[in-house]
Image 1 (cartoon, rainbow, N blue to C red):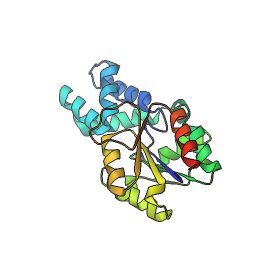
Image 2 (image 1 turned 60 degrees about the horizontal axis):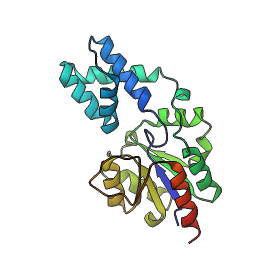
Image 3 (image 1 turned 90 degrees about the horizontal axis):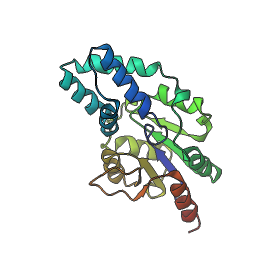
Length: 211
């Protein structure tokens, strides 16, 4: 039985990609460059760091400056405009109602993660947040997941990492945690479970709780 859900934030718990894409696109415009929004969006969904590096190289810009300006633009977008993915709050609520935990393990900074949770009334659904700014290496290194498991005395076999990318799956596998890939991304490391909407995940959890 799954007793803990471990969530990534961007594109998994919250639909932050439109805001990120807008921030990068506006920053490029301010720096005298123009590019279609869908191109930026495709790059950002693969990897934010890679997106900035690719666009900076394409337009011969300083990637550090582009990253700084994009971050400044992004901070101007209220968290209220970055909605939870449909069904995600219900899954979190089901887990807490049945005595389980929801944890966040994310590349996003703690402060902005808390702002998103607070803006949508979800703070009480989560027991803890783990981020690289606390000193953990980024995934696919499993250290951040192992720290979360140890702190909350969790059995890896009873945890499920909900994620979006190859590196998350690899981190989960290295930590001995089952992985649920949200969406239709092509990955070479097979997840334990793949869902395209959170109704399917909720049904999976309900059925698993009966065994």
